[in-house]
Image (cartoon, rainbow, N blue to C red; front, top):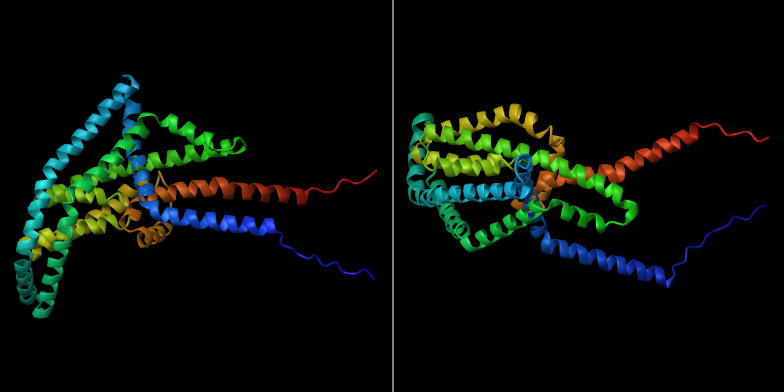
Amino acid sequence: MIDSVVRRITWRTSDVARILVLTVVFLFLWKFFWMVYSALFLGLIAVLIAIVLHAPSRFLSRWIPFRIAFVLVVLAFLAALAGLLIRLIPQVVHQMSLLAVQLPAALGDATAWVRQHTGVAASGQLLANVNRQVGEFVGRFVPLAFNIITVVVGAFAIITLAVFLAAQPDLYRNLFFRLIPPPGRERARRIYDEAGHSLRNWVLGKLLTMALTGTFIYLGLSLFEVPGALALASFSAVMEFIPNFGPTIAAVPAIVSAFLISPSTALYVTIYYVVFQQVQAAVTVPLVERRAVDIPPAALLLWQLMLAVGFGILGLFVATPLLAVIVVVVRILYVEPTEERYDWDRREAMTPPVEGG
């Protein structure tokens, strides 16, 4: 009878020390991430802006030197941004003043309109609560919206970083590869190139949809004579950067502004936004965006909810490009090696053993 052999697992002091060190390092990195995640997300936004600057510069470099083309593109970008801000800031200030002064009266008119068309009278307590909430919102939003120093410094840092990245992308690409050990550089090149290709196609497609959204929203709001049409259209174009949630968020201030005119105008603006979003979801998004980044809508929605709960509005802005990069990384580092090992094991199992002589 053969005695069974029992293997005793022993822990050496070096093993315990190694686990403790790894645990401490993990906790430190986790804590550090929660301290700097805003900077990391803003860095990703800078990468996307760098793509916007680099793509037309590379296109113009077919006829003129790249440095000259890049300077021209950056100057045009800054001039367009400055011109838009010069036109937007007075409209935003005017809209906030109208919201604080006219909204209580507009709520009273809306109550009369609802009572006239439905016969249902609104509660006076409800109107008082709404007015109080609006007042608190305006009181909190105005200081935040006009914290010019913080906004300007943050925007300047992002644009400066984007200019540096777009001016010499190969420099940072080579720096990234030098940080990777030689055996893993080929796979790192694949990740870098494919992730960059996905981000470039997505951000250029998104730029086109943002331009279309801003144009059509401006035309529609101008048709309904909504005040601040340019500011509201610009906000809609920016919110278009956020799939699923962005268009809904953008519709709220436009409907409120239309509500200051009349409840019927607010209803027409709501219908216009809904119809435009449906047309865009059926035509523009499949043709422009999903060809660039093929992510199932349910997976993207769940990912957006996770980042919104964990990181707020900034997480929503970077959700789609971040998921596009993660999909590429997981496919190259995990899915493809797993499939290769599975195919190899299956071929080994199907190969008949060689008979001995």
